[in-house]
Image 1 (cartoon, each protein chain N blue to C red):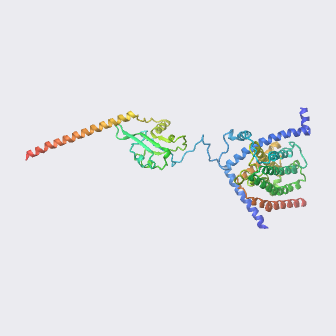
Image 2 (tube, chains in turn yellow, blue; image 1 turned 120 degrees about the horizontal axis):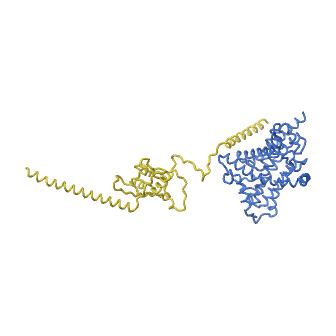
Length: 202
Length: 324
C-alpha cells in the first residue's frame, strides 16, 4: 500500500522535474536566426570554396601561377594560366578557373600553395541551375571582393596583353640568349686568341 | 436605449446575442490558440516559431485558415457518406452548446442553468461519439483505430473526472457554475483541493486528446487518427473543436478550482480569461514536455491510479465536510 503511494509521489516528482526543464528552455533566448534576413557568422575553420587572400601590403592576390594547386588537386579541377610581364620579377596569374562542382573541399590546394595565396571562403549559400554556375574564376571573384572592400581593383590582363607579354618575354629571352651566345663566342674567341699568344711566349 | 435594454432583457434575445458572441469567441480563440501553441512549442525548442505573417506571425493562422477554406472537400469513394458528412457537425455542436453555461463574469452567462457542470460534462462526452462516427465512416483502418482508442480512453478518463468534480460539488452543494464560483470569494478551491486539481488537469488532458494522451491521433503510428480522410473545412472543424474543447476544459478548471471571475482591480471577464489562458498554457506545457504514453500505460494509469486516487480524495473530502 505504501509502495503504491510512494510510486505515485515519485512519478509525480519526475513529471515536475521534466516540466522544470522545459520551462527553463522556454525563457532561454532563441538560437535560430531568420535566415534570408539574418545570417550567422561562420566559424574560422569553416571550409567554403577556396579563394585568393587579399594581401594587405599590395592589396591584390599573391598567385605566381606556379601550377602547384592544379597538379595536387585530386579532382583536377583547377586551371591556372600565368605569364611573366615585362618589368616584373615573377609570373602572375592571368586566369584561375576553379570548377567547384567537382570540388571535395580537401584543402590540398590551400596547403600546397608556396606563397599562401589561397584560403577558404566563408560562403555557404551556393545554388545554381547548371553545373557551369559553379565554375569560379578566382580573379573575377577577387575583383568583386575588392570592389565591396573598397580596394583598388586588380585588372585582369586581356588576351592581347597576355600575347604581347609573351612576345615581349620571348623577345627578351631571345635577346638574352643572343647576348649570352655572343658573350660566349667572344669569350671563346678571347680564349682562342689568348692560347696562341701563350704558345708564342714559349 | 430602452428598446435595446428591453430587447437584451428577454431570454431569447440574450440567447441570440450570446450565440453570436460565442461563435466569434470560438473562432478568435482557435486562431489565437493555434498561434500560441506554435509559439510555446517553438520557444521550448529554442526557436522563434512563426514570424513572417504579421508582427511575430500573429496572423499566420488567418492565412492558414484561408488556405484551408480554399481546399477541395474530398469524399473518398467507399466512405459511409451521411455519417462521414455528419461527424464534423456533431463534434462542433456540443462544443458550442457548452458555452451556454460558462460564467465569464457575474453577469456574462448566457443561461445560468442549475445543472451547469453536468451539462458541460455530458456534452463533452458527445465529442467521443463524433470521433467514433468520423473514424468508422472513413472506412480506413487508421481512422478506426484512432476512434477506438479515443473511445476507450474517454470512457476510462470520464470516471476519475466525474469523481473529482464530485468532490468539488459536495463542497459547494450545487451544480450551478455561478454558485461554485461564488463559493470561492474568500479562497480558491485549488488551495483546499490540490490533488483534485491535478487529477482534473490530467483527465482534462486525456479528454481533449492532447499529448501525452494524444493516442487517437498519434501521427507516428496512425497517420492522423480519426480525421485521416478529412480535408479542407471538414478537417478544420475537427481542429477548431479540439482547440475549443481545450478552452472549455480550461474554463471548467477555472470555475472549479481557480475562483472564476474573482480577482482584484480588473473586471471579472479579464480575470476569467487570464486564468483560462494560464491553464491552457499549462496544457501546452504538458504537451511539449511529456512523450506520448503507450496505450496499455494509458489505460493502466486511468484504472489503477487515477480512479482510486479520485475516490480517496472524494472520501477524504466527505469526511472533512462531515466532521466540520
